[in-house]
Length: 431
Image 1: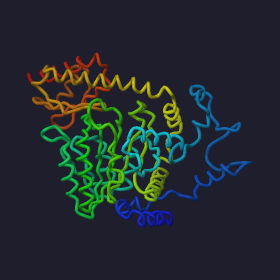
Image 2: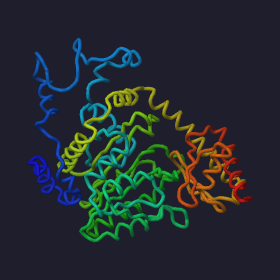
Image 3: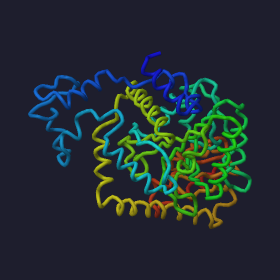
Image 4: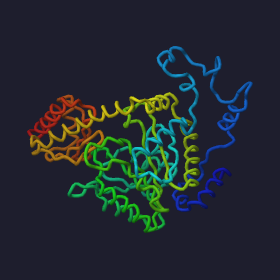
């Protein structure tokens, strides 16, 4: 094992031995080189006053070389904020601004010990880092039966985890915290579980209420008290899009510092919060003692260095400028109102009694999506029929569930959309 990795492991074992036990084999072996090209280039940047012949970019006229055909379309930005490599951890100012934003939007983080967000190539990359650092073959990764399918690829296929599902909803259509606790307690004492909490949930658009949130935290704490090491990840992809009476902040704040056997990790980003899907700017943040956070951040930088090296600089610059603008919050509120209007319209349509004979719907109060539970036809045949007959695209999930993204349908078109879905069901019933 590399001495730098051993040093990081020794620091973590001395400070937070349970967190050390959570690391995968790769997590224990990975490190960020301190004497490689990046560190030598950083040293040269501050001391090489005459010639800096270190990092592999081209320069010209005292700045980064660039093509005018590109710069002319980005003239509002300085070339130095676009063309050089961003640091592996991301632009320092962006990380600081995002942390301030987290504190403002999550009051439960006040007084908690957590690190500076590290920039990732959106949320999938952040989840992949979690998988690499904490999941070995056979480790339990726990998430509900209604989930984002990429979890299977990230944790099941890439890392050969033992995927443990529980039903998302109880019969009363509340979050199934008992199912979560039972899944956690199925792990033997001294074992490890990685828990994924995705609210607002994809695909259902559900965010738990305050009492359900307390039950989730209690389930994690019960597992820790039973001797289970728990890495609990809040996948906050759709954070802030809370349209009704639900939790209004991430559970990361309640989970941070919960128990020595609990490691809270927040994965979030500008991707969906700020409507910049193609920018691919996400963040990963660790809670814990300053020493544990420092070690985990160094190992995270090792993963980043070994995979993407660093995130895209222009995207980080664009997001940073937006976050600092006085127009950011008013414009975001404007888009929030549009999204809430669409969600409310969908709920009004579904509650009108117009379609009740052919489907029910799962609770939704947030995010981009909602899910129909079909009563009389299969989801996949309906999806195909809607596409071929009416030019309507939906997502079939399992036998009965049909996901509809109201986020991408104008409010005035929603009734027509659901009428067509309803007609599609009637068509299939008559066949």
